[in-house]
Figure 1 (spheres, helix red, strand yellow):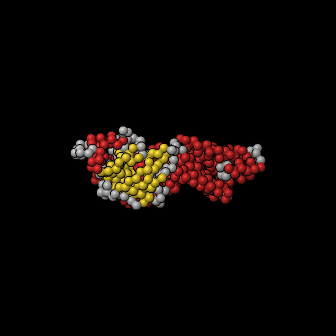
Figure 2 (cartoon, rainbow over the protein chains, first blue to last red):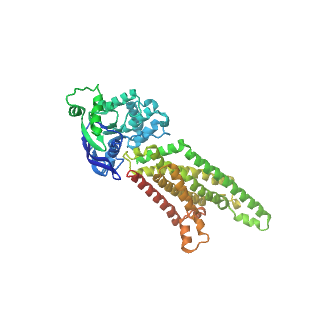
Figure 3 (tube, rainbow over the protein chains, first blue to last red):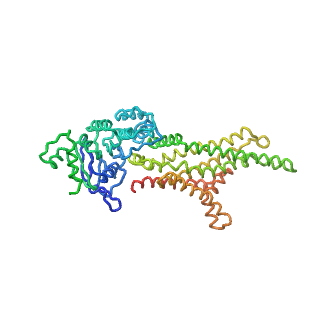
Length: 247
Length: 265
């Protein structure tokens, strides 16, 4: 569903994303993990079509993100690093607006807005101004916006940032429920987050892919002989530390 | 098409839920009213004085409200548009970038041209609202006044040509402002830059004074106010229409390129 080959992005002569190659099959939830500045946001921006690549290709749902941008974007729901809200608009009119941009028919705008609001627990704030929302609600409205028009692929840049622990659990459940129907690529630096929602993990370091595997695969490779369960999430911290800190 | 309409609706709702459009409408209405009252008073004074001198009656017969009052009003509205339109266009693109919503617009299946067009159409709608406020004054005269020998007080074709000229001027100014909004980092910078360029174009006519030959023709050709004058006298010349339309096209083209290019930065 997402196929990335040799994807590279340079700003002047600094490679922020360096020769990434990976592919994600339909319905999987993959976490993009890395320290700050590793190129997570840039990678997601490239896939969402916000930034052009210096070289390499990326295909989403069979469409080249750079060659057929409109076709690819129709199939992507994207939550940027900061939720893209208009402070002077109510949540309802905002969701209607974005649904309109995504080509939802006029008569279905309200239904579609209500559907994603229910999914993300934002129904109660539909008539409030986005500018007056708490950070948690802003984040959830941002996720709601990405879900409009049922995209095949969801690209979520730190979906749980700014949420309290209960909301984090809700979003985690939501993302897990979205898997299967949607292909999800999310970035996070919260390790428990990734361990509990994602079936596979991509670890980035200085723009390079240092590992890409299932959780079990990572455990087998980096903590050989250790028996770990998902309840004990510190294992990922150990693996992460091994992969991204220079030896 | 659906996306353009969605953008138009959203921009209009932003215009009218924030003070910007209201302030511009109030400014236009207030200063138009001042100019209108002044011009009307002047007309009354001239008419009264003319009645007191021999042969004055003939002068009064030739004076008409359209040329002496309405044309003066519309000429002043031209300057008002140059001063106020930068505030209508300033946040169209620059604000999206400041708020981080630009990333949303660039990742939904909508072309930059559609975004630019939707935003431009919304600003044109506010311009039309402002001009319809201005049109109230001649409408008032046509109801309350009367022309020489009991004719109509207002020559509507002349007024319509003047309003068309103002619409073209405003449309050109908004396109230029939209281009600067797409090129600038913040709305304030966009407003200042477009104010600078538009007032430069408006005042280019000053360089015709004392200049001769090619320099004079160039200054007159570039001047936004020179091209408005024929409209106010009821003349619609192709060259004047083309002047404003080419500014519109140039502004929209630059805006589209800038929006498209923003992603590549």
